[in-house]
Image 1 (tube, rainbow, N blue to C red):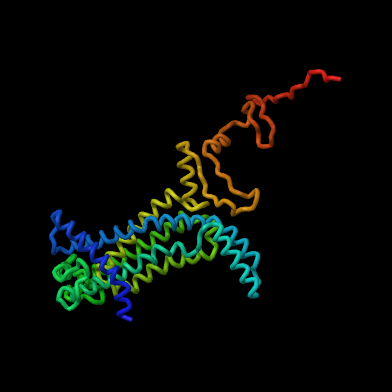
Image 2: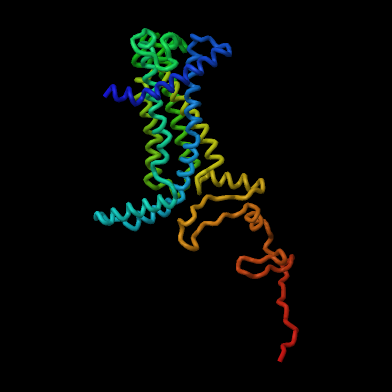
Length: 350
């Protein structure tokens, strides 16, 4: 089993080592001390930035898929209501088929939101293995990993951040000072939990429509919002300082990226979308709402309304001359006078 993971993760370990040492060389070239812990810590931050930039196209796809999931929630609830109380195998199969067909029409699926995390996880394990092997690589007991040569690994192993080695952890302080290691690890674990909670809370509070807050998916996200910080408190003490720094940087990136996305691409029907519509209307820009062609029945297709038209409807006085009213009539003159219908004085031809 160990050889299997070595074979699978080695290319990722090589990539992680290449990026870390590459950033270390850049920071050293601009004047940072080569053996300083801050230089290696910034190299880990650089690794996070590279990975997250690579994942931006997938993140954009995830956001679009998530917005489409919000749009089809009423249709999903209709399907669930249709088969509510029916527990026979045929009904369950039909409900699944109709739901999958709806996902297909909308071009989305409920697992798309997990893709960035799933893709990033192997790189996390690769970094964990690289940091865990720094001592063995530095002593010559393990082969170098790409640019992580014996001298580079020894230098990274001996470097300290606030007097704590990057490979040390809360439960495994190694040669570092125990008290300093546990204090730094605790601070990073708390930062991990807070940034994760803030990211999830921001999503639930601003980017979820009221109609979607009662469905199972919303309840699941609410559980995640409280369980993930708890998960970090339980597992965090087992991770080295370098891994904790990696996760804090990742969470900060996710929080900022989500803030930008919620502001520019909010979910349909959410408070963030209403705020975006108000900003666009104030600037005289059109309001464009996401719709899925062919998803709704004839006559139910949502229409996109321009902000200027919406403002004109709301600001135009009801007595404006010549304005066609909603019921098809014509508004009277200013001052409340009624427009008399014109008589046809032309004689009819006999």
